[in-house]
Length: 484
Image (cartoon, rainbow, N blue to C red; front, side, top):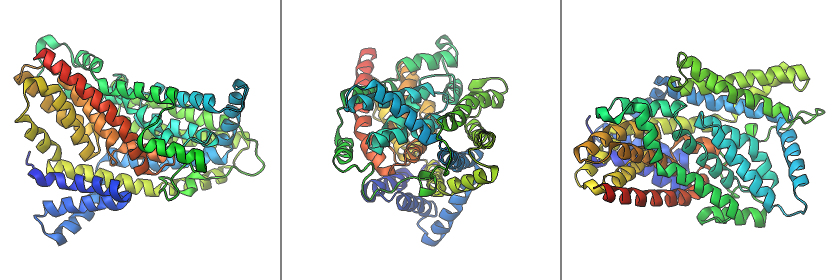
């Protein structure tokens, strides 16, 4: 595949740098996109500008992209429905009553730790699909976190760090099926076993997701925060502001502040039943789309189907219980979907930039350049760091897996390094870069589900991700030198 050399790095670097500097993520992604198409047009500004517009349109040529964008809109409908029906208010009241009974004093530290651990546990249990995990944690726990005065940045960190890490460590979901498929396409030695065996062995050496989860548990239990997260905690404690004063919330008021209908009883079941239906239907649709094999199912199809049926189920439930009439539910659905339009636009821009980076050959250029100066002892650590940079630049862990697994296996075999270790490093690096990138879809959805400023989420999560990445790099260096 042709690459554009150093020029291929400019669009993602511009987009990410501008986003972190200006906090204007829409403008930053659009600027990176425009620059990339100008490069493809050989420097012709007019042609590049028109091509950038067409590049945004071509996002919808991918059925997977379109499903995720539709999923984003339907999520807004679901959130608005469970708020309008009084489900959120009922859940908050029930959980707070239980916490009050468990706490003998007015001290909220114990309550905070328990709620944060519950949020993390919920995310880990929903390993079947990362977006479902993020959505459920954000929707269930945001009002409870708000009640306890916990900043939105902390909830976004918990939702994001409990989703992809748990999904990538288990083979029985779309993540596992995808990675096993990538491994199966590589020229593995006969004595390495089946692709599933290789994936399971690689998982045992995929240190970054494990360290992320352990770090999060330590942060919750100890109450120690660092960097921008510490500033967010101080702000929430001293001013009561759950977001920065001038934060750009990744959810419009139509979806965020839907008031319960007047005169209805607040019932937690109005929230829990639709969410449970969504979670239960996810593996069902994975099984259906996989023709009876859950690990071969389509993640994008399943998440769209499950969320859509949850919305329909909620409307039926509210009609039967008298909470909302069908007409009121439809009005709420449209209002909730309209609240997600800004996020849908952001997803389109992020997908367009990721497609552009593939066309420019950004990931391949980085990987191929690094191959020239890697010694055998440094191979695992370098694969991990290169995967991180590729995922950070392109905003996609799955795209990084596709690039880096295909490079890591033959590189490791040629340099007599354990291919299983190289695969683990490539996968872990992809998740690491995805955690750090403001253009990552999981980061964007985490900001949306928790009603957070997207750049604030990236900034506050970054120090913890860097700690996990640093420890993982050291571990791969040790293993590399021991096996050299």
